[in-house]
Length: 237
Image (tube, rainbow, N blue to C red; front, side):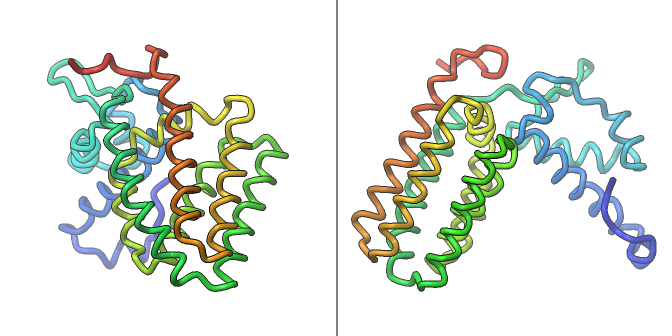
């Protein structure tokens, strides 16, 4: 359901309501697509969305247009709307951008990290280990993102993570697919721990290397899944 009290809705002007609804629908759908709760290739029914959210087609179409602009939805006139298959090329581009920004972020974080910052990162790693023990792998990516966002915050460039989020949607779908691979997330967790140890030593070169190893090895694991035609588009020539 869309969040918000009746009183809050009543205070909005008629012109504001469709925009707000569209924003909320966009956020809910984007999260579902990125987390693979809506599988690549699955049909999206405008009518069902209108009924689910109690809105007209206008905000639904606005939300779908934004998703189409991000290449997360394919709209075929007179045919239908579908969750897009994962584009390896778009995911790879997101990885390249993310690697460049996170390497800059981790080097700056070394200069500003406090002991409390280190403890906060260690607590997040503790959460990751707890998730692995419980086998709740669907929860891992949220804590993983919180870890990287925290490093961006420590670097005093918090908007770095906001920008990364904009370009890593296809990459995130690959991350979600790779989560169940035996031992993968355990290795990722230890890589996170290596990053924090380097931060704790205030060693920028070690921290950069640990981050680079983490991002590149994770992408290598994800890239090996490309042949799964159920989820991926054919590579563009």
